[in-house]
Each structure stands twice: as C-alpha cells, then as structure tokens.
Length: 176
Image (cartoon, rainbow, N blue to C red):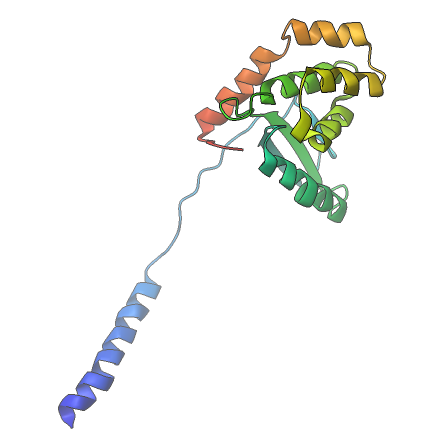
C-alpha cells in the first residue's frame, strides 16, 4: 500500500513542486525597440496620435489586401483620432511582378496630392495591376496624364522604394 501511495501521490507532489519552482523563475522575454522614421512618408491619422503603426506593404500581396480590407478600415474607424498609419513600401518583386510598378504609381500619384486615393484604388484592383490600370486610375482621379506618365517612365521613385525595402530588410522584416 505504501508503494502504491508513493507512486500515486508522491510523484504528483514532486511534480507539482517542480512546476512551482519553474513558475517562480523569471520569465522575462527581452524585446527590441526600433526607431522607425515616419517623417516624410505617406500617413493617415493625426501626427500626435497615441498609436503609430508603420506598415511595410505590397499592393499585389493578397494578405496585404486582406489586412487592408478586414483590419485597417475597421481599426481606424474604431479608434478615430488615436491611430496614425504610416505606409512604407515593401514590394515582394520575386513573387509579385507588378508590385514595384504599383508602388511607383502610388508615389507618382502622390506628387499630385492623390496618394491615398490611388492607394485605395490599387487595393481595390490588386488582382488586375498593370500599366493600363495605372493610367486609367490616374485619369479617373483627374491627374495630369503627361506628368504621371513621365514619372512612371523615369522610375522617379524606384530608388526611394528600394530604400524602403532595404530598411525593412535591415530591420529583419522578411515578408509583408
């Protein structure tokens, strides 16, 4: 009987004691805080918002579109005036052949104060991104067609977008 009692209760109490000792050990997880520049990048929301979200995104990415459609809009609506979203480009050019051009098109639209309108239209049409769509969206938004076309042809913002990509990679970002 003593042997059975030891096996049934003795082991359990030692296991509990061992678990209690483990629980008492500090479990602090170190974290890293990164300073991510936000000035000079397209953003929506107040400059002095309590929360700033920096999104590294890709206009052709289906998961980015899903986040945009299902989270971003409802998050901003749920916390009006409390969130600032800063958009940074991270086109995954290896798997999304139109991602770089879409990012360039948004930046070119931004020259004419239409960045966010163009941004929204790109996500609405992310399955159909191509040069004709960019020109069509520019026309729909009544942008100066010649200026927009020149900006796209000259790849005026390609280096800036690549800089965003490199910054994200240097932070350890591996995907959008």
